[in-house]
Length: 487
Ligand SMILES: [Zn+2]
View 1 (cartoon, helix red, strand yellow):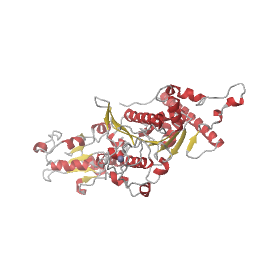
View 2 (cartoon, rainbow, N blue to C red; view 1 turned 60 degrees about the vertical axis):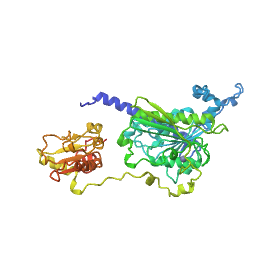
View 3 (cartoon, rainbow, N blue to C red; view 1 turned 30 degrees about the vertical axis):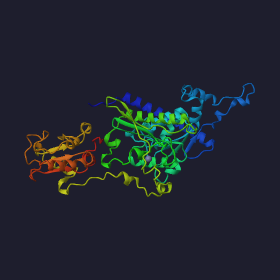
């Protein structure tokens, strides 16, 4: 179906975009005016307690008695709905106000987490991210906007949160967390939220939180599932069994790199990652409001919360053990130090492994996208089979004309029984010597499938060519058809 916007609709869209841009300009002008008139640091924008309109005007007016309550007048209005909860109260609100929270990752988890922490009146909110906003982020990273594509994510998220609550002091760390900068950044905060999306960061963040004794709220989400756990809570010194487990206690070994799927490849449903980010904010608020600075703060029973949008039970909670007596990071026998971490001798990338590009086929088993295209164009009646092994949703978005879809996962499930020499997807009309070309997303699964089909005997001892299209659909888009939406 082809949908074309009429001129009137296009004009209306443009009017809306201009209005948005003008609103954004206005915000930027106000911010610039404020920054020019006040002392500031380049990375932070802390308006609370400093804006002139926040001055206690009553002291200059003898007819009005001076303000004698704990919070400022407007704070009772802003936080009133949560103040009256027994679990918050004035004491909890003051703890939130004096808390410094670090959010690492300004994406699908970090956006909702930052929004709710900002709304709750956290004193200082630090945000770490080195990326810029991309269009593919917007379906789940709700604090960013179409107008802010290409803006640094930290700037975009702070801009959003400032609109929500200008009382909070926002600190932007527009870089990725590394072993070298981790101590400097994390040491300024009281509690950390891991809102990143890869194992390498998770181990680094956990290690620095153990070394600096910070509680850590960790969450992840992929496809339709999510998980959440509060780690290092409470953060007793290493070797003390009353301290909460760290990420290494729960996951001593990283998953095999080939099994790690990113949101880019595996997909992610926006509300799923949103739910997990909101829960991270909730757990942080609970820990802070309960009193991280009180003698009552002590051992907690850790539990891993699992969320599934596709299962019959949405939420499940699994009680976890405490610290591992032999944990690499938090046990008494751990030799991990800040110096060692900073020196770079702990190679997190190597520890987690890298999914290397596969290169298992011989050159003669591979054709370029351009060569295949030429072959088919010059021999339109060529008897052959083009097998597209991407998962069905990818295939349904766009495919090469004539391709037959058999998802890679079906080959992984199959054994190699004898009757696999005539699998059901193989057209009966295909001649026994007709070649089979295999294409996938980026050219890895296609190589594995080529091997698999040969193991199944489909190459008839070399009588039939079986090979893949080098670089998959990504190469097809680059070399042959630029209109293909690459997903
Ligand atoms: Zn541990």
